[in-house]
Image (cartoon, rainbow, N blue to C red):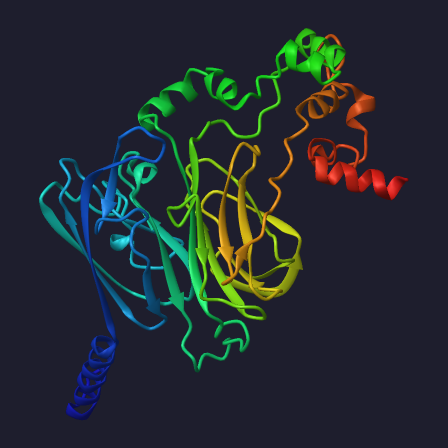
Length: 391
């Protein structure tokens, strides 16, 4: 089919207008300088990686419809990269070395450029080696346009605080990787959760331990690695003193931990969940929730009383340690740590599912799903609630 001059003119004009519209979008630029640094989180000086002199990396904020332009200056003695977790973008901008791009070599600069086509809470991190574990992680906030039909008044216009959860170990991450492959008990020893005979006798579960050993079943485990510290925005404890009684604040939470799930709870009352993994959800109130590795949640908290500051608490799933973010202008209110897990109760349940010869026990496996729920027996706060209901 032949095109006349008018048709050609309209096609060319349309292409020109499209390109003008594309490049007329707001370009939001960030410059990120990646450098070696030294940190002292535990009394020992250790190597880490800082970006623009900080850990976590700077929070990157965009609005849907923007074009992101991120200049990465690699000042390390090794290659690096940045991956934008959960973002929809051109494959070549995804930040995976040798798959979607070549590594960013030492003393070179790389520019990532991509459109922001979504909104929500996300995060970004290095995809090179184990650099993420020593500092290369940060929050990424994609805001809605104020005229977006999905904009929720009273939620999307609340004061917002990005919160990124992370871990720290004084061990070199490569050594952690090696110890996991060797199946060493060292981390369990550090956590005091080896479930030894001495512990079993102390807990009144000597018979449970003997049966467990006879059946050659492994000890109960929840988290594989012992971490020296857990952080919220790079701090074990910090305070947001700009909020007062009656204020609501939206926390945009990302779990940048390498291997730890975290329980989240709030000393000032219930948590209202309003988004998960960058997607809006029907606002739902909960007493607590668990956040998986790489998962994100948006929650709304309310400061209930004057002259008081209430703790938002992130506790490792194995209950070994926690970090605290106090919200409010007043005196910090104590919040109880989550109680230690009842490992031997879990072990006893596992024993009930297997015969002494190692075969599966049909009676044990035919229990209802509720009866087989490990949470019911291992979590003290749940167990006590169940006992209260039964009594």
